[in-house]
Amino acid sequence: MKTFKGKVAVITGAASGIGRALAAHAARLGMQVVLADVNAADLAETEAVLRAGGARVLAARTDVSQRADVEALAQQTLAVFGAVHLLFNNAGVIAGSTLWDSTSQDWEWVMNVNVWGVIHALSVFVPIMLAQDAEGHIVNTASATALLSNNPVAPYTMSKHAVIGLSETLRYSLAQRTDKLKASVLCAGWVRTRIMDAARNRPAELQNDAAPPREAWRIASPPFHPARELALLPEQVAEIVFAGIAAEQFYIVTHPEILPWVQHRADEITHSAPGAPGATP
Image (cartoon, rainbow, N blue to C red; front, side, top):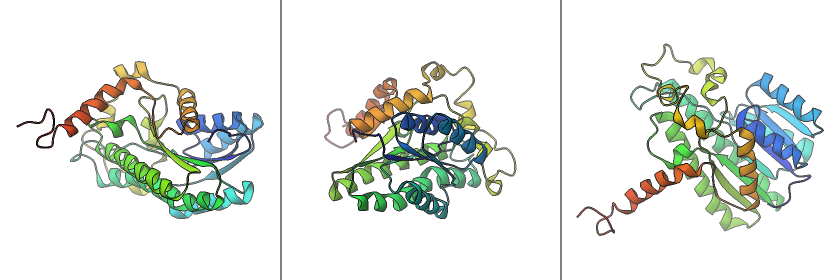
């Protein structure tokens, strides 16, 4: 997609962080913007800011873990703007710890939002976008974590690996149907967002009965973690993402610093087969 002005962007998790920055960037490009988020207060504030800047905006409180909410989002989008050209499956949360310390509530909440949220949106919006027979693009937000294998937060790490798999499947499935609808997966490193405060949106029924023994995401992300020095602003990520869309880039990686670690993982895989160069005899 090279031209954005006048087209329609739907963004989940749009009320804060990367989602809000994507919405603001889309508005600056002259797009009509659909904001979807589970946090009604933050959603209303984001809507007000964009409208004050002259953007055409639809805000819809949406829990992406609920297919009915996503279906309603699509219906509202079509009723107001008549089409969908850009879909950002950006809503995401983090919770839990190691495989054995994470609770069933941690797993359910993270998988419901990070994986089922993407599945719901793809199953609802892709048929609409294919039927339009128009230029379009879908961006699924994964994480740099999904390209590595050293993050201790099991539910989050697994969910983002799943988003990579979903996105790769989407890419090739779309290619068999059309050359007009493309896909990308965003693999962002450290970004200055509120994801570490995601519990503010955690449903009451999925709260832990007591604090888990270890919260690995807190241990892995102390206040003075060295990675914070590399942290990007959400607005910088939005610029990278839109450049990636224009270039029809599938993997959108925000932090080149992770690439040696990605290569290390790839080398370990490629050297694992009998007879492969570097394989153990």
